[in-house]
Image (cartoon, rainbow over all chains, first blue to last red):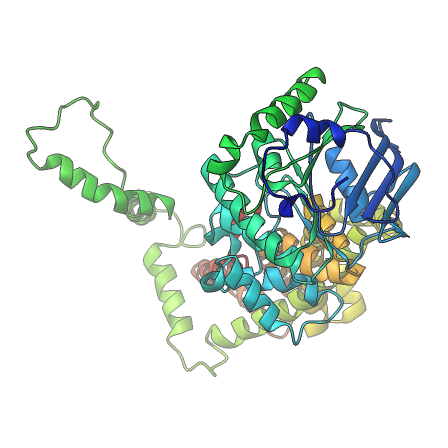
Length: 282
Length: 290
C-alpha cells in the first residue's frame, strides 16, 4: 500500500484501480505503528460477540477512518486500542509493544467532548498534565493549542458557556496536550450540526497536517470519512470485522467543495455505502 | 423565587398588551392574570396574624394555651433588646447552641463524607458498613440521646456528640450515592490518562458528587440544630433548649413561642447559607450532564 496518499499527484489514475489495489488486507507488522491481527472480543456479561478476527494496520502519521453499522463494535475496537477494554484473542500492539492498558502515547477524543463542568476550559485542557503531577512548565503548550483551535479567549470560561463545536475543540486540545503519537477519536463530531461538523473537519485536517499524529477516527458519516481519511476501513455488522479498506486518493488540503467534485469521490462513497447497506444497517 | 421571577418577566408583557396596538390580531385567549407570589405570601402572613390575634381576643383562648401575637412579640423583644453579654437575652444561649451544633456538624459531616467515600470506593467496606448504616438510619436517633448524655455528661460534649451523630447519616448516604452516580465516560477519561485512584476521586468523583453532598449538608444543618436542642432539653447549663425549658417551667408560653421563632429564623438562615455556598461551588448546576 502507498505510504502517503496526500503527496500523490491527483491525476488521471482511476479511482477504481486504486480502491481495488488496496482491498486485500496484508500484514505489515514492520511499518505499522498500530498493528491489529486476529483480534476477538466477547463481552463477559451478556456474551455479546463484539469483534471477530479484526485485522487492521495503521502506519505512523496515517489518518484512518473506521465506518460501520451501528453496534458493530467500532467503539469497542477504539477502547481496546486506548487500553480501556481488554480483548480475548489476537494481537493489538502500538509501536511493537502489546497494548495492555492506557498509554501516554495515546490521546483519546470522546463523543460529546466529555469535559468536566467544574473545570474551566484551560483546566480541562491541562488535565492530562495535572494527572501524574506534571502541572508546571507546560503553559506554553496549552496557550499554543488554545490559540490553534481558536479558544484563546475562552480559556477561563466553563464548558457550559461554550457551543458544542468549541467544547469538542477543547476535547481535542486535551487529547493533544501530552503530545501523544496516536489520536483515537470516537465519533467526535456526531453531536454537532452539519455545518459545524464540516468546519470541525476542516480544522481537524489542519491540526493533523501540522502535527502529523497517527489518527484513528470512528464515524457514521461517509462524507466525513472520505474527507478526513487517508484510508477508510469498513466494518461489518456485529460481530465486527474489517471487510474492506479503501485508500482515498485525494490530495490535501481538501475542502468539502473539492472532494465532492473529485472524480474519485462518487465511486468511493458508492462503494462504502454499498458495503454498509449490504450489512443491513439498522 | 420562581414566582417572583415570572412576575417580573410578565410585567412588561402585560404592559405591552395593554398599549393600543391596532395591528396585533386578538388571537390569543385571555391568559389568567399573573400571580404576584410575594404579595400572596405577605397577604397570607397578614391574614394568619390577624386571625391569630382575633381568635385569642374573641374566643378567649387562655394565654397558657396560645399567647397573642403581641405577647410573643414582647417576649421576643425583651430577649433581643438587651446587652448581648446579658444572660437574660437570647444572644448567649443562641451562641452556645449554634457553636455546639456547628462543631457537631463539622465532625459528623466530615466522618460521613469520609466513610461515604470509602464505602463508594470499596465494595468490601460497603458490605461491611452498609448494614449497620441502614440499621442505625432507621433507628430514631433522638432516642439515643439519653445514652449519649450518660457517656458524655451534661456539658457541651453530649450536645456536640448528638449533633454529630445526626448530621453524620445524611452525609454518609448522600456522598456514597453521589460518588457512585459518576458518569462512566468521566471515569474512562481518567483511566485513559492513567490517573491514580485518588486523582480520579479528587478530580472527578468528589466534584461530581457535590450536588448530592450539598443536599446532605442541607439536611445535616437542620439535624445538627435539632440534636443540640434535644440534648439541651435533657440537661444543660445554657442554650436555646434551656431557654425553652425554663420558659415552660413557669408556663411562659409566649417565651416558648419567642424562642421557637428564633430557632426557626436560625433554620432558615442556615439553610440559606448552605444554598448560597452550593450556588457558588456547584456553579455548573444541571448543565454538567453529558
